[in-house]
Length: 298
Image (cartoon, rainbow, N blue to C red; front, side, top):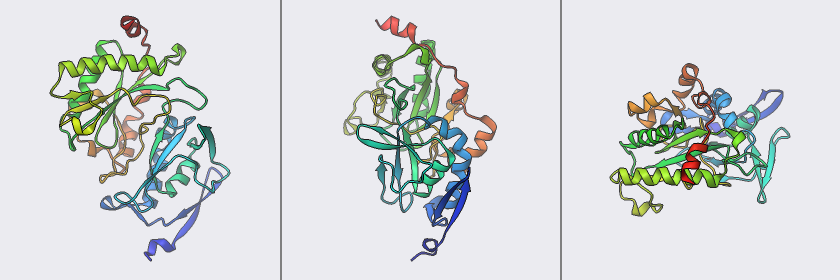
C-alpha cells in the first residue's frame, strides 16, 4: 500500500468540515501535482470557476488514480454527500450544483479533475451564453489559434464581440455573452452558428470542415455549432483538464491569439498568476445583442 493511502485529514472551509483523503496522491504525476496541491489550486481558481458553474447542472469527470489512468463521468451526485452540497434534478438525474468553495473542494477530494456545466441555468431552457467549438482532428494542431482568430474576425464583422478560450484539451471555444433581456433561444443561435461556420468552410476549405465524423475529417478542423444545445455541456472556463500538462481552460485576449500561443502554456502551475494580472477576461466582454444578425438571416 502506498504511503499516501494511509493519510487523511480534515479542513474547515466556510464553517464546513471536509475530510481530505490521500493528500499526497499524485493526480498529475508528470507535473508532480498531488491532491493537496490540486485542492490548493482549486481554492485559488474558485472565484473565477464558480460563476460559470453556479446555478447549472454539473457533470464531472473523475480520475480516482489520477490523470492517465481510468476515469468515469459523474452526473448523479456522489453518495454520501455532505449537507452543504446542493443538488438539482433534470431528466431523472440528481446533479450537483457547484455553487460554493466547500462543494468544489469536496469534489476535488473525490478526484473530480474536470468540471462541465450545462449550457443553461437550472429551471430554464434558454442558453446562458453562446459558444462555437473549434475541434482539431490532429494533436498538436499548429493552426488552432489561426482558426480561432478567423472565427473571431467573422463575428466582429457582424458586430458581435466575443472572446476565445482554450478548451484545456486540444481545441478552442469562442464565447459570446448574451443580453438575457432578449430571450435568445438555442435554435436561433444554431442558425447563426450554421451561417458563420458554412461561410468559413467555404472560404477556408483547407482549414475547416463541418464533417461530424472524426474519421472523415482528415486533418481539417471541425467547426462545431451543434454542441451548443439544451442538455449538453462544455468544459467550464477555468476548469482543469486531465491532460498530461495539467492544462486549464483559459480565456485569451485577441492580441494573445494573434501571437499563436501553445495551449500547454495555460495550466495549473501558471494560471493563478495569470489571473492575478488579467482577471476574468470573459467578464470584460459586454452582453451581446444579436437581433441585427437574426433579422438579416430571416
